[in-house]
Image (cartoon, rainbow, N blue to C red; front, side, top):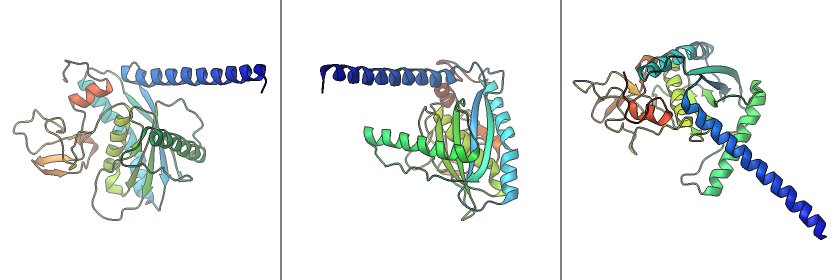
Length: 268
């Protein structure tokens, strides 16, 4: 290898690395800017069919998306917001064309990078199928739809990039579970915005931050469900899954993590 060729190769690799670093810095800045809430965030909601779905259930889910926007606007207003903070754009439903990546329990740095790349490939494949051609969204949530296997509802943790742009969740959909499904969508969206789970290893709500209304007197039964918890607390150790979007509550700890509340602030 000639010295000239060596220097050219090093220069090219240096330019590529510099370009990647600039892109990473700009992407990080854009993701951070989401939590400044200077404008509504635009979120793609991509519906993927992994099994048969009842048409009435699907129609109910789609028509309730706007209601979810309204509920989030109500919660935003409690922290001083004066506009609709989240606007969803729906795509699909289309058959899932690329299998969702499978995470490992305790990933290494390399495994985390591999999972992120696989998640990006999953998104690109299914974007093409759903006709999603723009990357100008603040986040993209992929909802894998199938028919219910039982009557039991439970919040299933999805797969996504904490603080990132892509999240995937699965939902066994029936007509009376549309609101529950959109609660799950909000949960995954808030993960993308930096919110942590408000429940412990046993799945029970952490007290008091996992309560929908921690100031309620008497405390139980709770009337609302913290968006980052799994259920509405009826009494200590007893919870039920959220049934209506009106139950959704964004607690002060969650609001602080996503930028709705400054340190030392309070809800209205």
